[in-house]
Length: 279
Image (cartoon, rainbow, N blue to C red; front, side, top):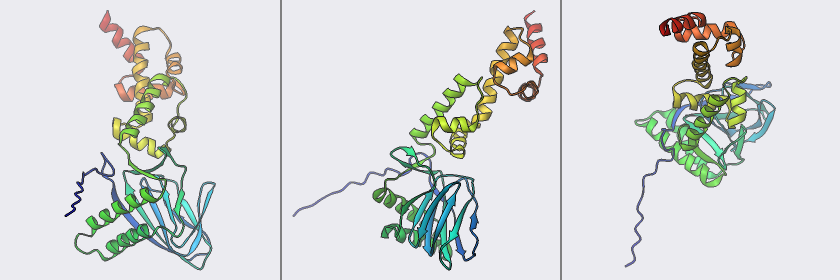
């Protein structure tokens, strides 16, 4: 008698952060003008159940038809769908703590996965729709179960990796951003700057950095600048305007407001207080 034993090791697909279904929106589009869809701070899986048209996002246009899947990383920007048929039925899943990667590089978005999709993905997606519409006992657990199966199938049949916000890669990305802020705090730094340096879209960057350091990148930058200004106030005779310029604030008034908000003193009050304590 031949026997084959297969041991199952329970590796969670999404590692440290639980990926879960946030919501599902079902749309019936039948207008001549383009339908506008809101952006959300979640990954989106867009499924054209029936019909055909084009999805437009910024300067990107993606043709879609019955069975098409289009996936998007977290993005607050709106996108539109232009009909090329009498009507279109579209389902959109919002998934928390999820991003899509290709060869470990974040994709430009949105991007198509399949036209006339792989059968299993369509099957699992339709099961999610059935569960969410009929709301039988345990439907939420069932939805997340089918979502997991969908994502596994997606990774098997497309050049896609599903990842969570707080896996090791994004921890390294956040550390790189923090190091950059520590070294370049005196420069003109915006979210666009950090997005270009890290290769992450701005919302995604802010979300992951805030989860790791409990403050946004810009809040961290301002705190770093204030800490550096304290050293200059304590150890130099630079004017407030000169200190403001040296630590990267756009104006003296903005620096003074930020300094007082953090320390409950103006820069001059802090300088006098510090020097009195040393005398």
